[in-house]
Image (cartoon, rainbow, N blue to C red; front, side, top):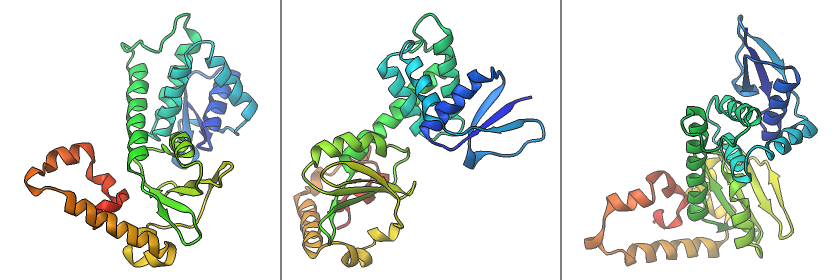
Length: 255
């Protein structure tokens, strides 16, 4: 019989569930987000409450077995939100804690390899967001941008934008996951707002953004179009470097 550990979806909650596995010496176990949990006649369910102290014990314990880079890979794998990634992470942690040798590059193990592959995918998405996010100045003098990345990479983008735009108030909002990061010139905080994708519609722009910003966006779009040389256009190469799913973030693509 398998034990399903239900957690709240946070990284600290996941680590709390890992601690629970060791605390109760569970063998056949699966860690599942509360939103994905499904009742089963053949499995037992336990809800694991997030416990920061226990989560920190797991995270610090890993420092004795894997590098800081290895821990970052686990965190990035968690941010992928791939179904069942929790169990791959659990497997990785178990192997790391039980092994006398560092297991980070044991790519003969398919689950160790999977963590490496997934973390690279999340890394690529993070760097694309760094490059493709476009801010717009709102009427209340704040720079605002929306994103809908494939993975939950916003926490990874934090340092990049805090350093690059340290002298400006800004808010980056993930429409898909319904939360954002707000920087008020002193510190960054996580916010949840009632924002819908319609905020990006041209018909709604005047309600949210300054007239100067809208004029700048139009001028930038016109410059982008006029600077293109039709005879040198290579759409295949262009799409390779800037996939179409990111065009909605780019102001130059709206004109």
